[in-house]
Structures are given as C-alpha cells and as structure tokens.
Image (cartoon, rainbow, N blue to C red; front, side, top):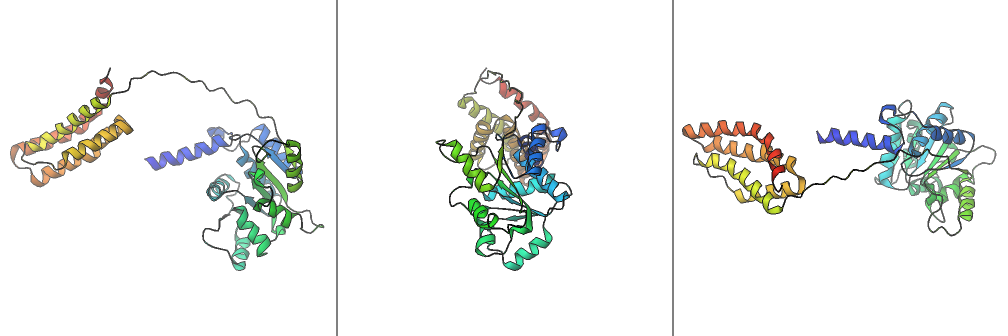
Length: 335
C-alpha cells in the first residue's frame, strides 16, 4: 500500500540524511562521534554539509546529557514544518523514547500553567525561535535553568534582531553567572548568512553570540554515483489515444451485446488517455481493472439478461487476468 511505501521512504530518507546505512540505523560514523565528543566538552557549532547527519548528532547529544542527568533539552528550529520533522526524529531514534513537546504557536499562546505542566511532563521541547523567545523574554514563563542542553538548528539564522539571537542575548547571556548554564549546540551547513564579504568577522560574531567554538570535521568522500544513459522511445500521443480507446471499447462491447448501453463512454476514454499519458501503463491497467471493469460488471448485474449476459459476465472475469499482458503490448507501440 502507498502509505507503507511512504513511511518506509520517510525512514530511509532520514537514515540517508543522517549519513547512516539502513542496516546500521543508529551507529554513528567517526566524524559524528568526533562532533559529539566536542559537544560533551564545550559549547560547539557543528558545520557539516547537508545530508551528512547533523540531526543524528543532535539526537546523540540529547541522549548523552539525559544520561548525565543534565535536565531537559531545548531544540530550536527555524520553521514550523521542521518542528514536526525534528520532534518525530527525536521520538523515534533517541534512547528510552523520550517525551517530546512540539511548540509552534499554531494553537495559540501557552499560559504559565501550560508551561509549568509541560516542564513536569516532557524531556525535550522542540519549537520555533519566536515561540521560545516570547516564553523566555516577554512572559518569563520559562527560565534557561530549566534546560541542560540548547540546540540551535540552522544556527546561521542567529543574526541581528532574530528571535534566535534574542534568546542568546536576552536569556543565556543574562543568566546567573554563578551557574554553568546550558550546553550550546549549533548546527549549520555554513556559519555565513548572506553574502560572503567578511567570513572572519562572521565567524567571530556567531561564535561570540552562541558562546561556542566552530568545529568542522572531515567527512569521508561519499561513494561516486554512476549514471547510465538509457535510450527509450516516446509513444506518440495519437497512438496512446488509439490504444486506450480500443481497450475501453473492447470492454464496453461486452455489455452492449446484452442490451446495456454504458453512459459517458467518451468521458471514460478521455480519462484513460490522460492517465496513460501522464502516469504510464501501470496506472492505466489499474484504471481498467479497478474502475472501468467493476462499473461494467455492475451494469450487467443490474440490466443484463439472458445467455449473452451470462457469457459477457464470464468474459469480464477473464479480462482481469488478460490485462496483465496489456503492458507488454503497449511497449510495442511506436517501435
């Protein structure tokens, strides 16, 4: 079924994005272990190319600091769609199946009581920067001491008057100097946001703002992808129309012999032409098997009479098996 295929593909894409093979799902690669070791030791901004596993490093860091008893994790992501994605990733791949809260502001502001209850119930808070900025700065419903790890996803967005920057300046920087404060983990593919005019200055700014040091591990070269050229002929549209029309009319003729005249045959042919030309042979065969044939069978059951009707019904059942050969016939058209 499509939903199973979609779920499998989503899991595969996550594993691929983490730089992990499907058969060793949560075994980190050497450079990811190096990143985790840095985060264990100090505030760190990890710079890795897209698709090399930054999300896995975040999950590993969350697991480590939870084992160390350092409290909750705050996972700040730039957009609402990423909130759902990263929250599901943490739920699925963290140790102990942590309780994860998604906060986007889509359902309105959370009250002080809501936040207090959330602090009692959840291990990881995942949300957008502005939601957390309002909770920390405007309403003071949260305190940075409530969290042992703060993760800034796509941390190059922490510039100027952005909500990410405000959380660091107005919350983390102003926290009690006597406490060590949370561990900071920044994740990005590039620490420069915008034009590459003065990268050295950009680096100083983001390291100063996040109170972190940049770490850019060496990523082994991925295997080379080889492409093969495949020559194929495109079936002319006119021949597609002729083929579709002949197949549908072949089925319609069976019920017409019994005195049953199917309505809207031209509409059925037009839809079949569209399906075959846009989605291919498999979709057209499905259309015949699951749409056209059952409808004709119902018409026969309702209006067909006599010996011819019974024979036609038997033929329709046989056509279900015959349709398996349709794809091979169509491939010959236009050769």
